[in-house]
Length: 50
Image (tube, rainbow, N blue to C red; front, side, top):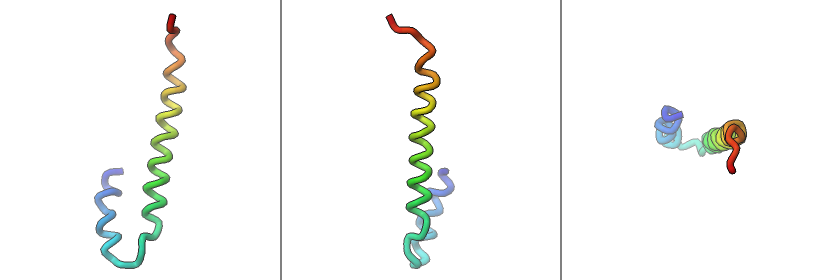
């Protein structure tokens, strides 16, 4: 993921427009958020709070 972010200035310097880069960043952020929600729901039900 970090390698993708480091390559962004190189792809933008070519001058052919943003291309698919914003979609890749958005998809990565969406996947990270969905994983966080899944992890919270999966591991958050393990303890009973009194």
